[in-house]
Image (cartoon, rainbow, N blue to C red; front, top):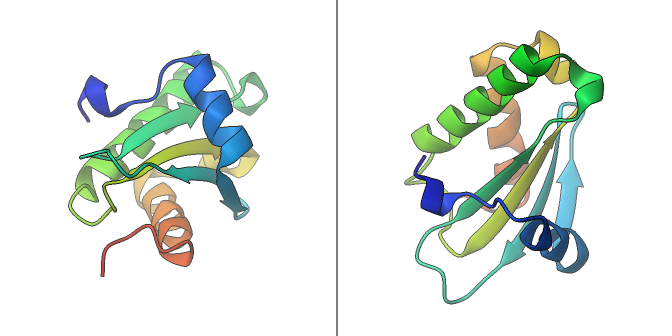
Length: 113
């Protein structure tokens, strides 16, 4: 995932939280906001300190970035997406996290047909 396609600034995170819609399952929470003039989706990742130490949090973020990389052609391009990891993700492997992410994206129709 290229750095240009990531949401980094707190201001951008807050904008998605306030103006966007949200949906959740037991493992992940997704916030998304449609932006018409965008040529590629952007993602922001949030993994809180309650989930684990830095190694665990970085592993979860790495898994989420890789899942988005594999789904790159399927995700609608005109969205800002923020993913918040919940407690159960610390025991999950890559395939389980990807499955949970696909479930959320499909439910909210963020995947192309």
